[in-house]
Image 1: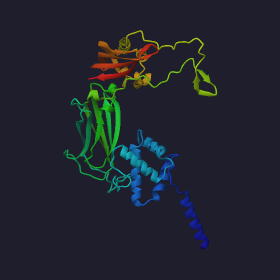
Image 2: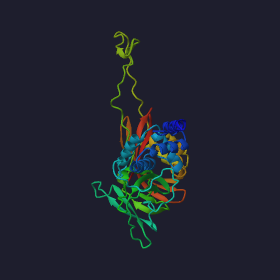
Image 3: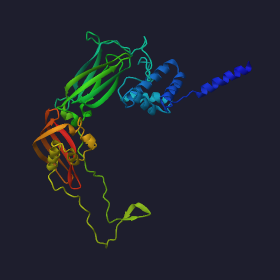
Image 4: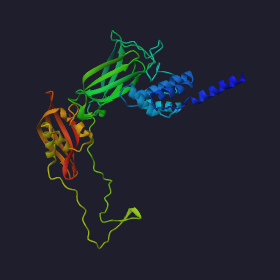
Amino acid sequence: MKKFSFLLVLSLLLFTACRKDHVDATNTKTLQSSINDMTSSLSTIKQIKFNEALYILKTFGVEADGDVEELKALGKLIDGKKVPEILTLADEVAQKNGIEWASTSPPSLGEMNIFGDDKAKETDANDVKASSLSIITRPTGDDGSGAPIAIQIVPRLVDGSGNPVSFTGAGLEATLEVFSNGVKLSTAKNLMQDNNFKGFNLKFSSIPAAKVVDNKIDITVSVKTTAKTFKMSKIGLDVNPSALKVPAVPKNDSTAVTQDPNAVIDPNNPTATTPADPNAPTTAPTAPKQPAADPKSTVSKFLSSVSSQNLKAAYETSSNPNWGSYESFSNPTSGFGSVKNVSVKNITTNAANSGGASVNATYDVTDKNGKTTSLKVTFGLKNVNGDWKISSYKINP
């Protein structure tokens, strides 16, 4: 009998020793197993808050598409971390995203399970009964001229009569997607805990001006309950073009130090230099090569190349990091590959010096669907080895 008791105690000690107190994200199985081990050592309230923290991190702390990829990204984020570290990280993510959640507050998000294998329960606060989703939008802010600088987007779950549904204590994942001319521009997420949800504040400064067509955007909001995901879209919302995100005109580095070409480097102290022999003939420093052409000729060549679909030649006239690789630049959906024709009305040089220039151009763009848009664009250019290269692109109102 004593021997049996000893073996029982020993087996319990071994079982306890095998339980993990930190996340093991080697694979999905070890991730779930280690999280289960960590959860089992907590009190009931702590278990709920720990699950809420994991949900916050999976939903808002990582960037990935789909539950499987989100789970992998979450594993990388919390691998090796213990419960207190995960709770602290979730607090930081909630605060950063403006979510009213804290690891020290009472449970507030209903039944949370990041592995998604739980069915709805009678007490599941996320099992909200609704018929559809409505969206309220209103311009906000002022750019100084009376024009807005953002749009407030507020979703509401409604019943069959269009009246808001009352619920509290939920943790519904709300997602905002922003498009223009069918191209996705951005995605944002937030947590809908009741039907007084403040929604999303979409700042125009977060939207790239070069990708907005006709100064209009489309939005789609989805809200995920336990049983169903509700979606609603609004098409053709006006934006303030002067408040959109535009690339900054590149500046010359005034802090760069020009080294004396005649300096002699001390091999024992490579960072120090000593003057060359004063009796040696001096050589004047080479001045940067000055562009011979007018900067507007580069803009004219760019527009002509785009119009003729010689996109390689158009890309070679630029040195604009915001346009990315040639594949991105020439993309037939989101890039200049969607252009069928460009009709130039006017090109003028605003200003120019040895290092940079600014050129205004007015032209009509016709896409491959036959839609024509009138544009007023300011091109920023910089001197690259004696050639003007387009370095920025701003669509003006």
